[in-house]
Length: 487
Image (cartoon, rainbow, N blue to C red; front, side, top):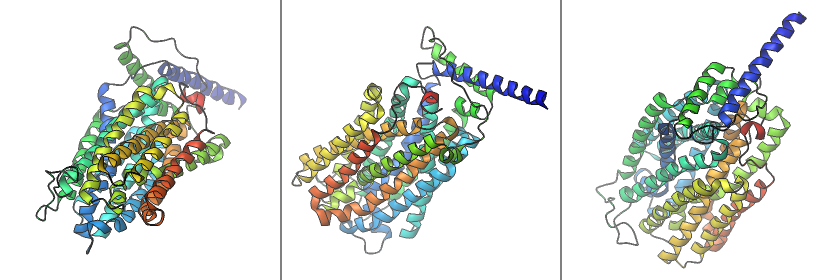
């Protein structure tokens, strides 16, 4: 018996050393080492996902007037809370239920499933005929979106170079910003009435005879999902780190070898192999069981949960409810939509700043910077006196802060968990954190009538500021190897 035990121990030790050597080879690669097409494929998926998040922002006013009896643009804010809230409930369910499968069965295959669910939800939305069906369709879409965001961030962090995890998360976030901008701008074009600038878009299409603009938007979203699904199916490899965590060493070695060859096409030579960290080749405890049984990851989870809950109160109040908020402040629907559409381009600037400068500071140091920008932008809007130019300036600053906060927090949260629980960990804190988003969108409009513009924007902005302060108690992760941060 002792001979058999010793032999099993020897083989396990040998497999662990081989696994550690493979990951050490991957960790030394200083550049993006999958094909350029792969980052485009992941980015396209994010573009569609954030198109779906952003398309309700402007288009809901037309949606409400078409499917809710007696709904007028001025009172659409009464109805946006429930579909956004249940979309976020779906997001939480999708993240919590589907993401653990990625820790057990692989990142790539589950990302295919999430894209199918999201696309079907968007297609269903395009054909609904009443408010109840609209809410149900948004819930289904949320299930796919919640899981997909968790898995994409996990995948990027596991294949990006150690010195570039923020950079490449921000690169796909540039695509997400384009998706949000596309959703908001199409909403302005297809679902608001024409009005002279700056009170609207002079060539907008919504008229008493063209009332299906919002349906067209969701149909476009479903088409984007089909393209993203096909590309993921045929061109994305599995994460080598996940393969090793499940004992598939040969498959992991083949992918890492391809990554080395891809890197050598851009470099004259690779750096020396990094020192190897001990690796588990079969993770007996994965997903939530690992998180809740490990004191380190449990403490990190509590901190991250509070950070996400507070942060999303601010972020979702502006990302999903900004047009309705401005309408409640007295702006005409077309003008509010125009401000939202123009300000969203600031999100692209935020993603570009994160891409170019994100690795120069610890992730958690960026969060107070983002929060201060968001708070300052809201105060400018509150004091604008409804002047279009000043309101737009405040909106640009506000959006810049919110969209700078997201890629930094996405990257940092994912780094806080080991490979055997990375998808589950991110899904847990980001998914439950979206309850804060539901609270923000549901109550932010009512705050306007109680606190006034200044009080509302200050209160909403302070939630993000509190989240940024709490994040300073978390670990530093910049330029560290994933298995060093989260063994």
